[in-house]
Image (cartoon, rainbow, N blue to C red; front, side, top):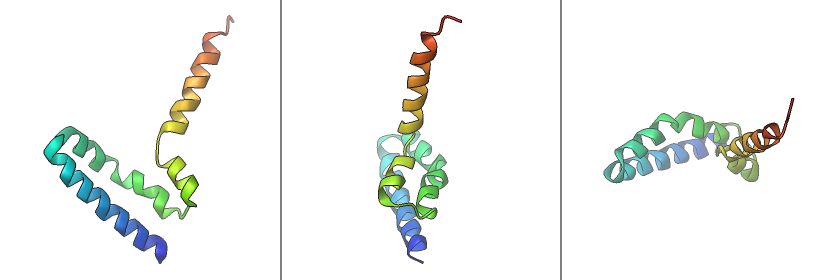
Length: 77
C-alpha cells in the first residue's frame, strides 16, 4: 500500500512540475509528460532509495555507452 501511495504522490508531483514547466518551456513540459509513466516505473517496483535514484536517470546507460565507444575506437581490427 505504501508503494501505491508513493506512486500517487510522485505522479501528482510530476503533474505539478509539468504545469509549472509549461509556462517556461512547453517543449520541456511535453517531454516530461511523455516520459511520466516510465519515470514512475521505478517507484512501482518498490526499489530501495539508492537503486531507485540510479534507475530513474539515463546516466548509467549513457556512461556505459560512452566507455564502450572509447574502447571500440581503439580497436584496429
